[in-house]
Length: 161
Image (cartoon, rainbow, N blue to C red; front, side, top):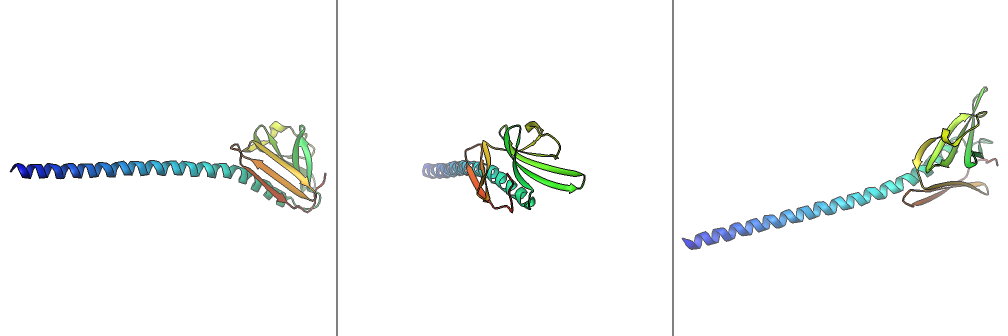
């Protein structure tokens, strides 16, 4: 009778230890999965900001890509890309794209309005953003807050200095 009780307690102990090992591995696997997910999301977020800024400027340049609509300007001594449009005969407008106070900003005003940097709408938080002319190309460079740098060359129809 004593032998049966000993076998039963050994069997229960083995089952309990097996269940405990399974639970520990499940917790370890869940923790590892959470860390991998966090790292993936951080990488996507970092990549998203600089890519979005580049894609936004590229699309704006393509929208305004005709003779005399793209030029370089400034908003309170901040270099800006000026995109000119004639909505109708009485209301010529300008869209300024510039880097101000840690963000890529856009300002849409009538041509006769004197723009100020604070008037613009902050769109994407970046650590740096530049638009430069290289021969007949525009080089757009965005650096995310995490230091990821992306650059794109755009070939517009014409650029006025």
